[in-house]
Image 1 (cartoon, rainbow, N blue to C red):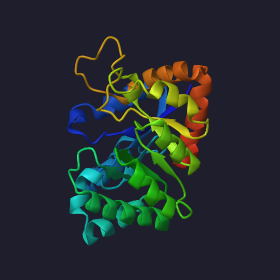
Image 2: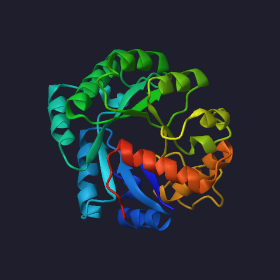
Image 3: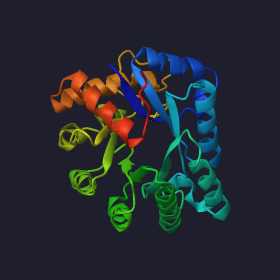
Length: 268
């Protein structure tokens, strides 16, 4: 059984001491391919470099390149030019993590929208899909995406945590949905237990968002309290249970979906 983790923050300092071991542990648990997330120019460049270092054959590790809405206030012509260059790298398979976050507003909504639309334009020019972040901003996100959808190749709402109305609106735009260990959090993710059934096969992908969002249902909890891509199997099992779907069937269609979305090679 092969599964794909579409969101791993492998550049994070929590992995500084054991990145190779983390990757090997994930492979041993059936995670055959991973997408390393870039959230600014530094992490996007680093994620691309890590793919070359940790996967010299070029079959297992790929990355995204983008500027997170938290950092949108820094967006300028230089960042746009650098992102254009990164978008041409063979390992970069999506633009992002970019989008809107009106929950924390570390950057103003206006700056977020400006940076997001600029990155959508880069994705369109390079014919790359988008790895999008949205938190408490579905209405504005939908307005922006509707204006660009005909030109975009594809877009996934990473770590979906919204309500039924936003989920169905994203699906109506023919977008993809990423589900993380948030669905294992009884405090915040209970509403996803029924919503995850509404996501059709071919639009659903799985991710850990490691080292964040350690599934609260994971027993025993790891000593370091750090999420890892090797725990994707736990999310797979939880989603399969909630969808009333055999684990191997869910693994197959989410893996097939991720391979198509990110244009990944056959790992075999």
